[in-house]
Length: 146
Image (tube, rainbow, N blue to C red; front, side):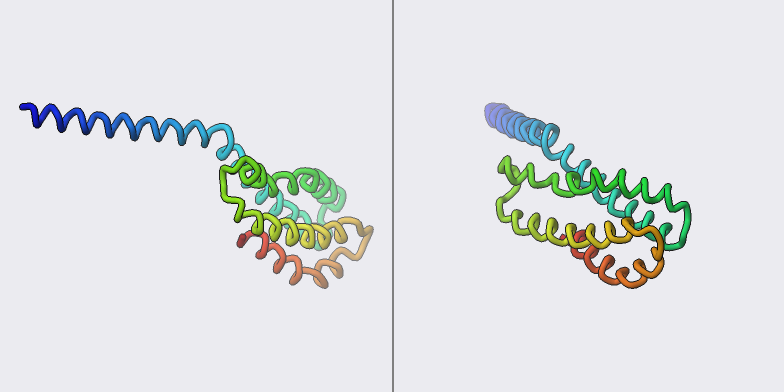
């Protein structure tokens, strides 16, 4: 009987310990990691909405609407894509990820510069788009593969 009671206490302590560990993880995940993941996902969505606006612009569809879409998304996308930097700064993810963040920032800036050039035009969208589409796609792949 003492053996069964002892095993029961050991199992109960293990469950309690696991519960406490899970609670600590949840407390860490809730205020920092979950909002950062959401913000980062929104940044990726912004990237794709900018690409859609660029394609529509190249096709000559609703130019003013898509230029406004670009302006709206371009105000948000950079901050959202760089949101994991907060986790590095807080020490919640390894500082080794800093190199990945630097690569993301560099690739994004080059990608964004190409798109800003397109949206700055008053005409000739299709020519600009065709001239730069390979570079745009290559830089996007570098951004999303990190």
